[in-house]
Image 1: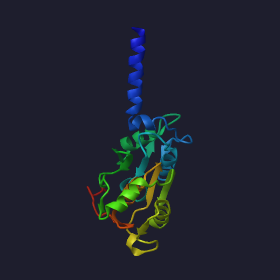
Image 2: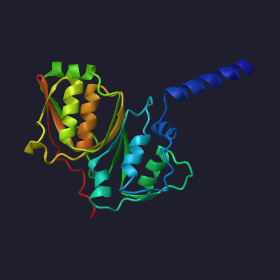
Image 3: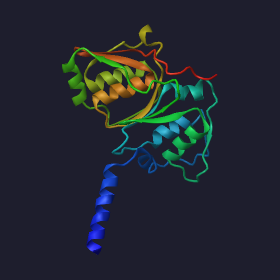
Image 4: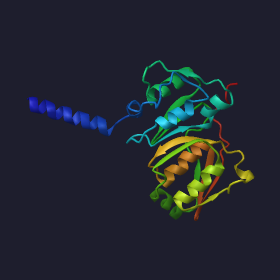
Length: 224
Protein backbone atom coordinates (compact mmCIF):
# COMPACT_ATOMS: atom_id res chain seq x y z
CA UNK A 1 0.00 0.00 0.00
CA UNK A 2 2.83 2.38 0.89
CA UNK A 3 4.57 1.60 -2.41
CA UNK A 4 1.33 2.40 -4.23
CA UNK A 5 1.10 5.77 -2.39
CA UNK A 6 4.67 6.71 -3.33
CA UNK A 7 4.02 5.68 -6.93
CA UNK A 8 0.89 7.88 -7.07
CA UNK A 9 2.84 10.77 -5.53
CA UNK A 10 5.59 10.37 -8.12
CA UNK A 11 3.02 10.47 -10.94
CA UNK A 12 1.39 13.58 -9.48
CA UNK A 13 4.74 15.34 -9.08
CA UNK A 14 5.78 14.47 -12.61
CA UNK A 15 2.46 15.72 -13.99
CA UNK A 16 2.82 19.03 -12.14
CA UNK A 17 6.36 19.45 -13.45
CA UNK A 18 5.25 18.75 -17.01
CA UNK A 19 2.27 21.15 -16.78
CA UNK A 20 3.95 23.98 -14.88
CA UNK A 21 2.10 27.28 -14.97
CA UNK A 22 3.73 30.63 -15.58
CA UNK A 23 3.14 31.82 -11.97
CA UNK A 24 5.06 28.79 -10.66
CA UNK A 25 7.90 29.49 -13.09
CA UNK A 26 8.15 33.20 -12.21
CA UNK A 27 7.86 32.43 -8.51
CA UNK A 28 11.30 30.78 -8.67
CA UNK A 29 12.97 33.85 -10.20
CA UNK A 30 14.28 36.28 -7.56
CA UNK A 31 14.82 39.93 -8.36
CA UNK A 32 18.55 40.56 -8.59
CA UNK A 33 18.67 43.19 -5.85
CA UNK A 34 16.37 44.17 -2.97
CA UNK A 35 13.65 46.37 -4.46
CA UNK A 36 10.96 48.05 -2.38
CA UNK A 37 9.27 49.99 -5.18
CA UNK A 38 8.88 49.60 -8.94
CA UNK A 39 9.10 52.94 -10.76
CA UNK A 40 9.86 54.35 -14.21
CA UNK A 41 13.55 54.42 -13.20
CA UNK A 42 13.96 50.73 -12.37
CA UNK A 43 10.95 48.55 -13.17
CA UNK A 44 11.60 47.40 -16.73
CA UNK A 45 15.31 46.80 -16.20
CA UNK A 46 14.86 44.95 -12.91
CA UNK A 47 12.15 42.66 -14.23
CA UNK A 48 13.80 41.84 -17.55
CA UNK A 49 17.08 40.98 -15.83
CA UNK A 50 15.27 38.72 -13.36
CA UNK A 51 13.66 36.64 -16.11
CA UNK A 52 15.36 33.23 -16.30
CA UNK A 53 15.31 30.35 -18.73
CA UNK A 54 12.48 27.90 -18.00
CA UNK A 55 10.28 25.34 -19.72
CA UNK A 56 7.05 27.36 -19.70
CA UNK A 57 7.67 31.01 -20.62
CA UNK A 58 10.21 31.81 -23.34
CA UNK A 59 9.86 35.59 -23.32
CA UNK A 60 8.74 38.35 -20.97
CA UNK A 61 7.50 41.28 -23.07
CA UNK A 62 6.63 44.82 -22.02
CA UNK A 63 4.13 45.95 -24.63
CA UNK A 64 3.91 49.63 -25.66
CA UNK A 65 0.89 50.36 -23.47
CA UNK A 66 2.79 49.12 -20.42
CA UNK A 67 5.93 51.15 -21.10
CA UNK A 68 3.76 54.21 -21.83
CA UNK A 69 2.42 53.95 -18.28
CA UNK A 70 5.98 54.52 -17.06
CA UNK A 71 7.59 56.78 -19.63
CA UNK A 72 4.79 58.82 -21.21
CA UNK A 73 2.06 59.05 -18.55
CA UNK A 74 4.59 58.71 -15.69
CA UNK A 75 1.96 57.28 -13.35
CA UNK A 76 2.91 53.61 -12.92
CA UNK A 77 4.38 52.87 -9.51
CA UNK A 78 4.07 49.72 -7.40
CA UNK A 79 5.21 48.79 -3.90
CA UNK A 80 6.78 45.42 -3.08
CA UNK A 81 6.24 44.24 0.48
CA UNK A 82 8.28 41.01 0.46
CA UNK A 83 11.82 41.19 1.83
CA UNK A 84 13.06 38.95 -1.01
CA UNK A 85 10.64 39.58 -3.90
CA UNK A 86 10.42 37.37 -6.96
CA UNK A 87 9.48 38.19 -10.52
CA UNK A 88 6.00 36.87 -9.73
CA UNK A 89 5.74 39.35 -6.86
CA UNK A 90 6.67 42.14 -9.26
CA UNK A 91 4.06 41.09 -11.83
CA UNK A 92 1.41 40.81 -9.11
CA UNK A 93 2.27 44.25 -7.73
CA UNK A 94 2.01 45.86 -11.16
CA UNK A 95 -1.34 44.27 -11.99
CA UNK A 96 -2.80 45.14 -8.57
CA UNK A 97 -1.51 48.72 -8.29
CA UNK A 98 -1.30 50.08 -11.85
CA UNK A 99 -3.15 49.98 -15.18
CA UNK A 100 -0.77 47.26 -16.38
CA UNK A 101 -2.20 43.77 -16.93
CA UNK A 102 -0.69 40.38 -17.67
CA UNK A 103 -1.61 37.83 -20.35
CA UNK A 104 -0.04 34.49 -21.24
CA UNK A 105 0.16 33.93 -24.98
CA UNK A 106 2.29 30.78 -25.03
CA UNK A 107 5.24 30.93 -25.05
CA UNK A 108 5.12 34.68 -24.22
CA UNK A 109 4.12 36.49 -21.04
CA UNK A 110 2.78 39.91 -22.00
CA UNK A 111 2.67 42.94 -19.73
CA UNK A 112 0.14 45.22 -21.41
CA UNK A 113 -2.70 47.67 -21.00
CA UNK A 114 -6.19 47.60 -22.50
CA UNK A 115 -5.00 49.39 -25.64
CA UNK A 116 -2.48 46.71 -26.74
CA UNK A 117 -3.48 44.08 -29.34
CA UNK A 118 -2.52 40.78 -27.71
CA UNK A 119 -1.72 38.73 -30.81
CA UNK A 120 0.88 39.39 -33.52
CA UNK A 121 -0.39 40.39 -36.95
CA UNK A 122 1.50 38.92 -39.90
CA UNK A 123 1.13 37.82 -43.50
CA UNK A 124 2.94 34.98 -45.29
CA UNK A 125 3.35 35.18 -49.04
CA UNK A 126 6.21 32.67 -49.27
CA UNK A 127 5.78 29.54 -47.15
CA UNK A 128 9.32 28.28 -47.86
CA UNK A 129 10.81 31.40 -46.28
CA UNK A 130 8.45 31.09 -43.31
CA UNK A 131 9.53 27.48 -42.77
CA UNK A 132 13.20 28.50 -42.77
CA UNK A 133 12.44 31.01 -40.04
CA UNK A 134 10.65 28.36 -37.98
CA UNK A 135 13.69 26.10 -38.20
CA UNK A 136 16.33 28.74 -37.43
CA UNK A 137 17.44 29.78 -33.96
CA UNK A 138 17.58 33.25 -32.51
CA UNK A 139 19.98 34.33 -29.73
CA UNK A 140 20.22 31.90 -26.79
CA UNK A 141 19.44 34.87 -24.53
CA UNK A 142 18.08 38.21 -25.70
CA UNK A 143 17.64 41.22 -23.42
CA UNK A 144 16.38 44.41 -25.02
CA UNK A 145 15.51 47.39 -22.87
CA UNK A 146 14.15 50.42 -24.73
CA UNK A 147 15.84 49.45 -28.01
CA UNK A 148 14.79 51.03 -31.30
CA UNK A 149 14.39 49.43 -34.73
CA UNK A 150 17.85 50.58 -35.82
CA UNK A 151 19.24 48.32 -33.09
CA UNK A 152 16.86 45.39 -33.63
CA UNK A 153 17.04 45.12 -37.41
CA UNK A 154 20.77 44.24 -37.73
CA UNK A 155 20.45 41.68 -34.91
CA UNK A 156 17.53 39.96 -36.64
CA UNK A 157 19.34 40.01 -39.98
CA UNK A 158 22.55 38.55 -38.55
CA UNK A 159 20.94 35.84 -36.42
CA UNK A 160 18.25 34.71 -38.87
CA UNK A 161 20.31 35.10 -42.07
CA UNK A 162 17.49 36.92 -43.81
CA UNK A 163 16.92 40.30 -45.42
CA UNK A 164 14.86 42.64 -43.20
CA UNK A 165 13.07 45.86 -44.05
CA UNK A 166 12.88 48.73 -43.40
CA UNK A 167 16.58 49.42 -43.36
CA UNK A 168 18.01 51.43 -40.43
CA UNK A 169 17.63 55.20 -40.40
CA UNK A 170 14.58 55.15 -42.68
CA UNK A 171 11.40 57.12 -42.08
CA UNK A 172 9.37 53.89 -42.38
CA UNK A 173 10.39 52.90 -38.85
CA UNK A 174 9.81 56.24 -37.16
CA UNK A 175 6.47 55.13 -35.73
CA UNK A 176 7.74 51.81 -34.37
CA UNK A 177 7.76 51.65 -30.58
CA UNK A 178 10.96 50.92 -28.70
CA UNK A 179 11.44 47.25 -27.79
CA UNK A 180 11.62 45.97 -24.20
CA UNK A 181 11.71 42.20 -23.74
CA UNK A 182 13.80 39.36 -22.40
CA UNK A 183 13.83 35.96 -24.07
CA UNK A 184 15.53 32.58 -23.98
CA UNK A 185 16.01 30.08 -26.81
CA UNK A 186 13.53 31.53 -29.30
CA UNK A 187 13.11 30.11 -32.76
CA UNK A 188 13.41 32.54 -35.62
CA UNK A 189 9.64 32.70 -35.97
CA UNK A 190 9.16 33.31 -32.25
CA UNK A 191 11.71 36.12 -32.45
CA UNK A 192 9.64 37.83 -35.16
CA UNK A 193 6.52 37.56 -33.00
CA UNK A 194 8.30 38.83 -29.89
CA UNK A 195 9.75 41.84 -31.72
CA UNK A 196 6.39 42.68 -33.32
CA UNK A 197 4.56 42.51 -29.97
CA UNK A 198 7.19 44.60 -28.19
CA UNK A 199 7.36 47.24 -30.93
CA UNK A 200 3.70 47.28 -32.02
CA UNK A 201 4.54 46.15 -35.54
CA UNK A 202 3.15 43.83 -38.17
CA UNK A 203 5.37 41.75 -40.42
CA UNK A 204 5.11 40.19 -43.85
CA UNK A 205 7.16 37.13 -44.83
CA UNK A 206 8.10 37.37 -48.48
CA UNK A 207 10.54 35.36 -50.56
CA UNK A 208 13.92 35.74 -48.87
CA UNK A 209 12.95 38.67 -46.66
CA UNK A 210 10.74 39.97 -43.85
CA UNK A 211 9.11 43.39 -44.00
CA UNK A 212 8.02 45.09 -40.77
CA UNK A 213 5.46 47.90 -40.61
CA UNK A 214 3.62 49.82 -37.91
CA UNK A 215 0.60 48.13 -36.30
CA UNK A 216 -2.29 50.62 -36.22
CA UNK A 217 -4.63 48.38 -34.19
CA UNK A 218 -5.88 49.75 -30.86
CA UNK A 219 -8.14 47.67 -28.63
CA UNK A 220 -9.13 50.62 -26.43
CA UNK A 221 -7.97 54.21 -26.19
CA UNK A 222 -5.81 54.80 -23.09
CA UNK A 223 -7.25 56.65 -20.14
CA UNK A 224 -5.56 60.02 -19.69
